[in-house]
Image 1: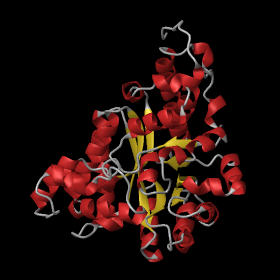
Image 2: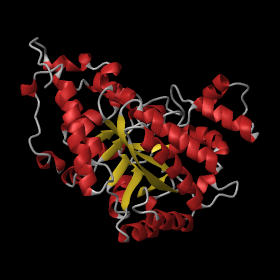
Image 3: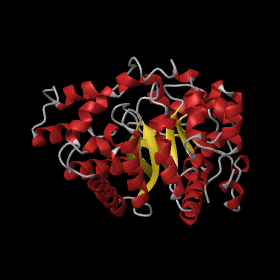
Length: 379
């Protein structure tokens, strides 16, 4: 049993206890992470040299300056320019397998126990790979990491808003064909403005009718109308970002009442000017309103972040207490696209570990100790 502390503390100031080293210890989930935005810089450099691809840099450090967004860009479209660089070396089976393995390895080393990796196969076909080849490559890398580290993974295939609805149908078919084989959901990503999700609704119809999961990028670079389309035209089970949901009170009630998770990505939302400052992000309002908020990286390389840093920024900026930290961590596991029985085990094991770590610092009487996982599984 965890040793209880007898010191007195002010719950309002608990966030001061949450250092990065402390937060790194907790089991975590990352539900929104783009493969092509999460490559190690040295790997990007090595792959370019091996493949003879010129990326306009003379060293790995110079390359890092070209792809990492440390401050802000003009908008989401500007942010996405970094992906034009990374995608140039991700056109072979070996490269996709390698970066998938390394992403899972990096995540596991900061105690990410569950991760859903998303990418669009359509962006990796320039050298002759098929859509299925890309799926097999990513699965190869992820399975290799799972065999070595304590992490479970899944793949989300992304349609692209700016490409034709016909191409989205191809990816929908792939998402259905690989159900139960590692692909856990279908997504629609890319530039929101001027590219409405409803144009791709046939792909979503196909996926939903095969009982596959759906998440949609929405409410990031466009208003709540985008979220409305994602939910009511595309049948989304989760919303990627959802930053502008706050602008529609009725829709926010719907998202809360139907327990639709939001895949929050704090750092990238500041970088793309969805919000001007971190403290302007509606994360605190969403948390207080009992929305199911999760914290995610979006793009580990491009945004120069990881799940621990996202947690740290949330704790410091929004002054989370230990209960709110606990709830946020659990939300990630609750929102996983996993079969029910697998999710039960994941939640149970993660909760025990979270409470053991919190119990070292905070009085256990202040924690809502889970006697039966069913009491929290659906809330």
